[in-house]
Structures are given as structure tokens and as C-alpha cells.
Length: 173
Image (cartoon, rainbow, N blue to C red; front, side, top):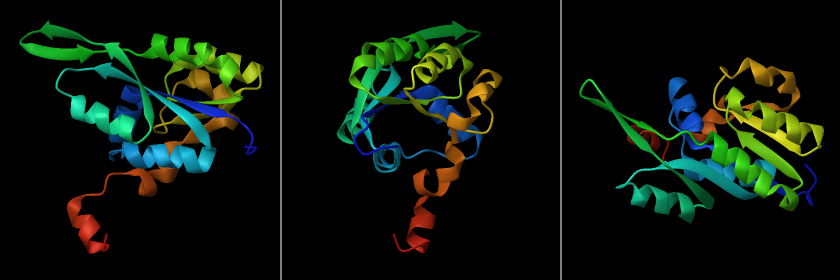
């Protein structure tokens, strides 16, 4: 990417978080923000996340390390004495990518969800798609058409994962 290119990232936090965990590792969101800044020269990083009361320290941390948080109100669905929290951020991510469209030259979409196909297609057609960062090797077959833009996050796992306390001490960190 050219140094004068203004790049924004739009992140589906649920897809990113669950995708890395399905691959057996946990993402350090602070390291990821720095990685986006250094590797892709991302100027603004929008993180789409479900709002859950009691998570204010997490939200504060994410803002502190440079994310612009876009909250989705979540629904608590109770079934058979089990409560599931639902907060699909797809519509908000697409909407904000289009609201910000005049302000960036390139966009990075962080999700392997096929629901973003229309956004990826539009950005690519208009020469504004930099990358689609997928959290793991399993991503929607709809996105395969854009394979040249796909960046599997596992490539950077060693740099971006949360290290266990024992591993930190054994490496002298």
C-alpha cells in the first residue's frame, strides 16, 4: 500500500474473536491494532461489538488502544434454562463502511462471513478493497472470488496471540 493511501479497517469482533478461538488461540486486541497500523498503515479502526453491561473495562481498553467502537445492542435469548447473547453486527459494519466511504482510499474488512460479500464486491469494483482479513482458514466460499485480497490471520498468530503467563516468563518477557 502506498504511504499516502488512507486506509480504514472495519472489524466484525464476534467473527474475529470466535474465528481465532476455533483455531486454538486467543487474539490480543491491542497487538492486533498495532499490527494493523504497522503492516497495513490503517488510520482508523472500527470495531463492531455487541454491548453488554458490565464490560465497560473491556470497552475502555479497546478505545485506549485505538479502536473506534460501534456498539450493537444485544438480545438475550432464553431457551431451556440457557441464555444466549445475540448481537449480529453485519448491518452496522456495512452501513458504517458506506458512511465513511468518501473518507478512505482503501478498506480492510476483518471477517470471513459471507454476509459481507456485497460490501467486498462493491469495494473491489471501485478499487477500494485492500484486504479481507479472515480469522481462520474456514471462511465463506462466497469470498473465494476475492482470493487475491484474502489475508489469513493465522499467518501472524505468533505475533498476535495472548501468551500464557508461563510462556511469557520462559521467554524472558
